[in-house]
Amino acid sequence: MLTRRRLLATSLGLSATALLGIASSANAIAAPTRWRMPDESEPHTRTWMAFGASAAIWGKQLLPETRRSLALLANTIVKYEPVSMLVREKEYSLAASMLNPKVNLVIAPLNDLWIRDTGPSFVLDDQGNKAAAKLNFNGWGKKQVHHLDKNIADLVARQANVPVINTRLVLEGGCLEVDGHGTAIITESCVLNKNRNPGVSKAQFEDLLMPLLGLKKIIWLPGIKGKDITDGHTDFYARFARPGVVLAGYDADPDSFDHEITLKHLEILKSATDANGKKLQVIKLQAPFDIRDTFLNDEFAAGYIGFYVCNGAVIMQNFGDAAADKAAKAAVQKAFPNRKIEQINVDGIAAGGGSIHCATQQEPNI
Image 1 (cartoon, rainbow, N blue to C red):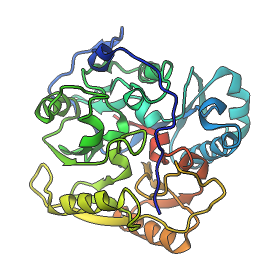
Image 2 (cartoon, helix red, strand yellow; image 1 turned 120 degrees about the horizontal axis):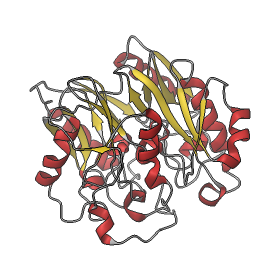
Image 3 (spheres, rainbow, N blue to C red; image 1 turned 135 degrees about the horizontal axis):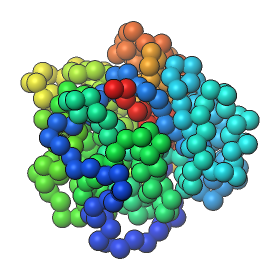
C-alpha cells in the first residue's frame, strides 16, 4: 500500500509569465561553469527545516501530530549535526518548547513546512565557494498558496551568508537527485510540465540545469503527472546512496497508481549507466502494506525512499509494518554501511503527502 498527497491544496493564481521569470536578488550572481551540487552523503554544515505546518493547510486535527513529527525529526538530526529551524514569530515559544535547545530557531514568514522544495539547493564551485541555487518555487505548479514560501530560498541564503544563483527554470529540490559526480536522476512528470516550464524541451532543460549543478548526465524517469501535488517528485522514487548505487522504490500493490510506474523506473535504472559509464547497482525498497491507521488518509505517503542522510546517520521512516520496516532498514543499512540508521515515526508528515526528505534541506560543508 502506497498513497501520496492528492491535489487538495488551495490554488493561488499567478501570471503565466511568472513561470519562467528570472529570480531577482540583491545578492545574486551569475552562474560560472564549475558549480557542483554535492551528494547528500557529503559533509554538512547544517540541516535546514521549517516549523511551517498550519491549520489552514493541515487541518486542526492533524496539526498537533505534524508538529510532533517535525520536532522529533529535528531532535533526531541535531544529535548528528546543527539544525536551523524556520518558525513564525507567533509560534516561536511553541517551537522552542518542543525542540532540543541545540536547534537554532530563525523567525521567518511561512506558508508550509516543505523546505526541500521551497528552500535553495546549495552548490559549491571548484574554488570551494558556496552558493544557493534558487529554483523559483511556484507552489508545485500553482497548486498551493506560496506567496511567503516563494521567498524562502532568498531568506535561507541570507541566513547562510551565501550568494544566490538565479535560473529561468521552475522546479523544486525534491525533483533533484544527484550523486555529486556528474549524474542526476530527475522525473519528467515534474520538471517537463507546462505548470512549471511551459515550452521548455528536455534538451533546453538540460542545457540550463546541467551547468548549475555540475551534471554530465541526467537519467530520466517518467514519473506520473497529476496524481499528487508534486507531479511525481524524484525523491519519492529513487535516491543515490553513493555514485553507482541507487535505492529505488517499488509499490507491490497492483491496485496502486504507482505500481506500474515503479516497475518501469526499476527497469530504467537497472539498465542505466552513470556519467562515468558505470552501470548502476539498484537496491529495491518495497513499500509497506500494513501501516498504522491513526493518521491514515488519501494523502498518506507510505514509502521508504524519503530518507535523509546527515553527518554519520541516515534518518528514515517506519510505518508499523514490522516486516517491511525491518527489511527497509536492513536495505538502507546495506547501502550506508558506515552510518547509523535511525528509523522514526513521523506519520504527521506522511499524512500530508511527504517524507523526512521533503521536510529537510542540507547545507553542504565547504
